Structures are given as structure tokens and as C-alpha cells.
Length: 327
Image (cartoon, rainbow, N blue to C red):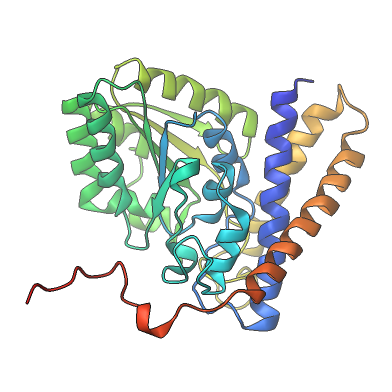
């Protein structure tokens, strides 16, 4: 067992504990009034990719932002304070769950509009290339975003300019409540569409953190060496509803069969990673339990910190939104 593989499991456990705790508080307290998109069940995509980045690489995400933010090293207290709308939040209480940022960690930002950060990452990568910097920009998005025109445009520009951008598609099979089979034609995959645009692309089991990590290392090396853009299509599945803390299978909504969700839960990325590591470390289950306790204390401390912080001053609510108009 290598320390690197253990760290991947540890980071997934941390994200799982943080999000499960936040989901409980969100539901029970009604004090976080921001929309929340949880990555419970999808931790391997964020952890596997972000562990392959270095401090100079920049990461952008869409609305499902908590996991990549934490995997890239974002400040947990600042993230939780943001969810509570406090001035100490990473966006000073103005952005909520969807608009996280931690430039010091290399987490360049997240946004709500579908596909919005894909071209931003391409522009960042092109700037890196023009400056002769061996750096990469990474952009996370779901399968639904690949149906936006900006996705095709971004693939094309990145390929033409050989921009060092890593496109990470977290294909969880649904765009809100619409399954991918009802939205995209049978046959061509998202990987196929990227390759058609001249972008190197691979499909990976997104619930296998070790496979994701190895694929991301290969992809980022490709980008930094000047070989152009790369796309990872990662097959995964969210356990909770599209937006909000609850489960949405078998509850009468009807768009996700309970059997389908249960089958994916059985492929839990944390359980699978622990199963691999157990062969060399029989005590891994005890270690995971210790981590869960440790991270439970950490997130509860972050929540207590957030609740103690003040809300933004009403007089300063527009700070950063508009430049002063010259008189």
C-alpha cells in the first residue's frame, strides 16, 4: 500500500463526511438558504483528478462544486461560512454553494450557468500556453453541459490553439431529471464527440479513484507538455437529488428507478477503494472509521465557526458587483 493511494481514500472519506453532515444541517435547520448540489457518490472524480494537479494548475467547476473545491485544497471553514451566507465565506456571503473560490489553493471558481466555466478554463489554458507556462486548466462539468453550444465551441478552440486544458465530464447519466438516453442519440459517446473535434479523450470508470487518478496524471502530463487539450469522460452517479439534501429515487418522482440507484450505491467509490487497500492493510476499516470521526469533528467545528460569523453589512452588499460610476 502506498501513502498516495491511502490519501486518495482519505480525501474521499473527508468529502463524504463533510457533505453528509452539511446535508443533515441543511435539511433540519433551514439556515443555509443557498441551493446546494451534493457530490455524495461522486467523490472519486474530484479526488482522483485534483490529486493529479499541482499548485500552479487552476480548477473550475459548475454548480456541483463542493467536492472539487475540497479536493483541490479549498478552505473548509470559508466554504461552510459561504453556505451560511456569512462575510467570512470564500465569496463573502454573496455567492453561496454554487459560487466558491479559493485562488490560494488553485480553485479558480465555480458558477451556476450550464457550461459557463468551460470556455473560461479554455481561455485560462490559452493564456498559460501563450505565456510559455507548463500549467494546465481543469474544468469539471456534467453530461448535460455537453449539450450546450459552448461545449463544442470550446473543444474546437482548444484543439486549434493546442490549449493545455483538461475537460472533465462527470457523466452521472442525468441532466436534472432527464436521462442521457432521452437527450443524446444512441451510438456516439461524449468521448467520441471530443475526438471528432480533435481532442484526445478517454472513458474511465469514475467510481474507481485509482483509475481516475492514473488517467488524470496522463492527461495533465499531455497538457503540460504542449500536446493540446484532453477530455476525461468519467462514468459516475449522484446518490442525492439534483439540488438539495434528499434522496429522489423511489419517492414518487419516477425518473430514477430505485434499483438503478441501489446498484450504483453498491459501487460506492469509498467501499471499492477500501476493498483494494484491505489486501495490503487489513486494518483499513478501522482507519476509515477513525477518519470519519476526525472529519466529523472538523465539519462540526466549521459549522459552529460559520454560525458565529456576521452576515455581510447591508451597505456593502454591492461591493465587487459594480464599478463606481464616474461623476
